Length: 310
Image (tube, rainbow, N blue to C red; front, side):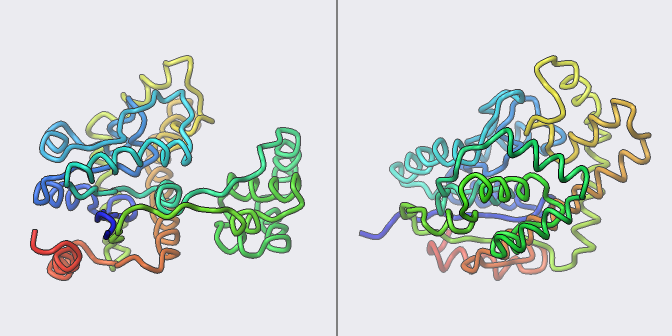
């Protein structure tokens, strides 16, 4: 028996995923399973570009607003909680649409995550001290010597993943890539079409990012962060508050930047996020890439060829 179909719609921030996916959702009469690490949190609305009530009414979304922002939600949590939604949609004869830009969530759900050694607070503290003294590039160079496969996949400006990879090697004597290779991953129980939406002109993407951020400011983003900041359970090291835009807004409201600098930093950080997302999605050799504006016909044909006329 052939596995049921599912469609993954990936792409960098501000690439037009939500509008395209909502339209496809309505055409297919199905629902969207959000694959976004910010949308899982309640109260992260404007800065997370959460779909509005009109979109949610016509294109229902699952896996949004399922945690409070002071709670930790991992990629493993996402995979465990998202899979039943996919199975429920398939049983009802609907095609699940997996939509978002969080590459690790996609990997956890589709490929499974490796079993890794537990975190070691002492080792992590030592590595952070080295990072403060020697700089992040020195730690990335060490990772390159110890685990070149992981180093090639981790951006030199990604402290969290660099520290974790070095921590894994220190506590286990094995590289992160060794652990990943030895992990047994169950097969994804769907026949999957993976689509990446990305403007071919990176300048256009940068323009969209700036326009969207300015609209967020006009919509009251800073007021949203002020309310979050007033919650004693929240602090800037939480995953929710490390989300792009929220981190810079928190710093701005703490007096660490003026309005102009805050805007520039937030837009620059969003561009860096988009760059990391594009790099991540390029590692998926089975994905089909489309410019959502210039290649609408090709995109529609690809979906029709996968599902039949919609």
